[in-house]
Length: 205
Image 1: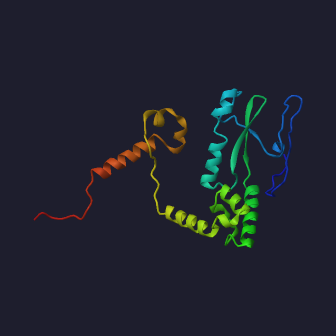
Image 2: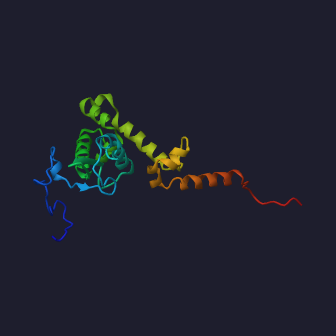
Image 3: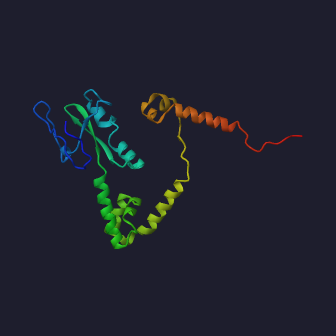
């Protein structure tokens, strides 16, 4: 077994398919590391589940973006010989590209710093690039930064909407967040708060 190095870009091995395990690669897929997802789907996957039932794609893309995961920006899947293989799309390439574009906007006077680009949407960046007079980027970015600072003052609720039996007890994915126990605890705290009168102790005499 080769000694593992921390050096970025080191290639330890390649397997691109053979006669017993052929692989149809698309684009630059073969440059990435795909692992057999026997944790979630150890058996051959059905066409329907692979098409609409997987956790990969937009759902994971949102989670990577929402939580700012540093090592990746998406989690995708590929069906190989009937089995599901997955890989994490590395983040550094996209971040480098965006920051390089941000530096161009700084040079042009649209931004104060290159990372300001992350306070804009993709469509806004496109509009700024093609017609800078139609968007006041600095004002928009200042507004977004202020909104984010205000958001830090908010304590998010554990849940919102309607908590029914299916949502808490039948669909299993919510269990990763500690439900239904987390829901039961939140309800107990709500009932305790509703039945508790808080104030300064006083004597009636």
